[in-house]
Image 1 (cartoon, rainbow, N blue to C red):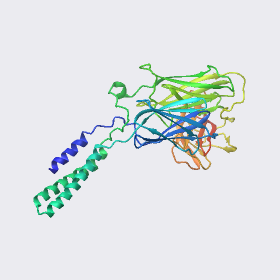
Image 2 (tube, rainbow, N blue to C red):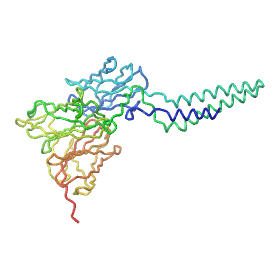
Image 3 (tube, helix red, strand yellow):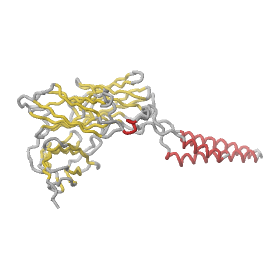
Image 4 (tube, rainbow, N blue to C red):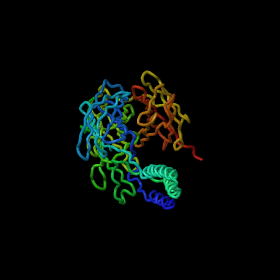
Length: 439
């Protein structure tokens, strides 16, 4: 009897279905950075534990905002049920609680000023595994049989008592075996996860890169005037809008816009306004050529970098978003931020192409993570053909440190970014890279 029960437990474990969606994790928070109404914020959707139940949403501000209200609307894609609320963007936000009635695909609509973003997400709840059922079921049966065996033994029926004790031992054995082997079996997909796609060549080999087009509206912005930078994403094989971007470094896309001379710099996170359609509002105070680099990642595919350029016309004007200025062309040139002069330290002092360079920068107290990292280093070649983005991987402290290998000799424009309690600090500098010595 014990052998039969053990064999059944092993078969149940061996035949358990693998997880259908390995990238989906229930109970974790969804964090999506957005540049909306001129503010850099991160929207946090807290993980849920039960449905129907509460869904908590907060908006973290990384720049000073004057009580920026964010309209919230959560809609179930499957039945259209909608709930609304309001959140205040703040460094330490109060979470707004909305009621959701079912798991599965939902859309979160954000509204601030006259801008709107629609973020797709899934409400997920962990399912009890077959292993948990066997563990608790086996222990329950063992307890019942053990009590029955004790009572039977007390009535002078030793044969039945032994049989009940054997059954109890079998229940305990099944529970113990499941505990031992359960960690080797993939957990079942959470309730609300996307169905597993049918096996095809494209899913087996990963989805292709998107075909992306970036443009400005109007086509040639005027200096000092607000314009919209649009990113349209299309699947090259089907021609359909791409709407399966995965959040990487807490954003659906990272867009860096710089002027040709590097004096203007903006690192923003566009709003998803429709499937395959992203946009962000900007302004530039000086005419000239500007370069835009967009980093994005499709589900079951690798990271992708898209580049484009555009021209700003008209005479130079003051702008609320004039960007960051780099005046010196010297390697490791000092920059001024918030009244403090900071100088990155490079090792070696003159980087050599193709070899690692360490870049250190002292930071003030109170640095906090932004986009999931303590610090960001963004690097652009002088001519704009090269763009790189690396991170400080350590915990916030008194400095940020990066390691980067410049691909070829030349002059590079670089920016270090980190977040303090009330602002995002951007430190620009330039680097002159030499060629390795010939052997």
